[in-house]
Amino acid sequence: MAGQSRIKKYRRLVQTAVFLMMFIIPLLNMFEIYFIKGTFYSIDVGSAAAADPIAVFQAAMSSKSVNVYMALSVVIPILLMLLAGRVWCSWMCPYHFIAEGVSFIKKKLGMKKSFPVYSPAAKRRTENQRLIILVCFIALAGVAGIPLLNLISAPGVISSQALVLVKFRYVTFELVFILALITAEFVLFPFFWCRLFCPTGTFLSLFKTERGMHLKRTAESCSMCGSCRKVCPMGLDPVTDGSSLLCHNCGDCIDACPDNRKKETLRFISGRQNFPS
Image (cartoon, rainbow, N blue to C red; front, side, top):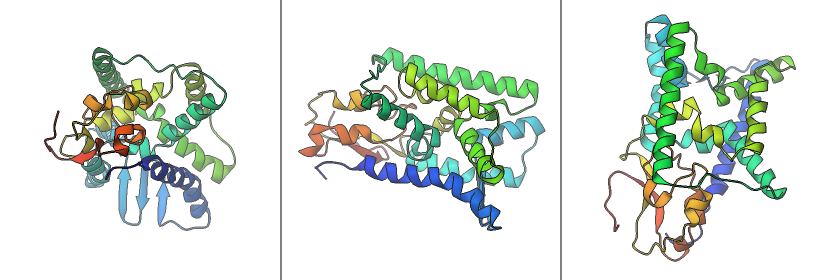
């Protein structure tokens, strides 16, 4: 449907709810309500369990075994990835929510956003760099026999710090890592961690397919104005890069597209549908 999209409004509601749940869950547990418990490393809701796939992968490497519980705990996140793309990153990840807050503050303070200049070659380098970093850390974790990637999992660290803060009224040294990332968000370009390094996002992107939800230009009416490219937090050209492993389906480009106000031009689709190029 043509007209102004409101994807960001709904995304912000989901982000806020997920962020608040990090504090509400341990609070419920303090009152001995255990229907839901855990952090973003692993969370249980009733009899259903969902775990960070990369945390489970590292645990399997360390123990050299996989049990049924471990296998079942990754079904939900991987299924979400296959069906809806990397929506975890842009719709639920607490670090991405914080990074967007930093970007908003920088805008209010008149600080330049300084996004990297887009080019197809830069996009390929970024995709390759992320994969190389992921492989290197997995190899180190295998050699060390400890889940090293858990130490730099921003959503896992943030949620575990929220639990410790609510239950025990203090935070641990792990919070320094998050504060360092937030400081870097102010100094460097926006979403630098999400775009260049995040191991969780990189690992999840390996399950992205064109059969799941992804971005697509669906009409010849696209004016190629570049409005979508200017707002993309991952430094992509949404017109051509909707299937990129970097795209996390935030929908900002759809909201920003002026052509969508006249005719649906840029939108999310599922499956391999053919549209005018």
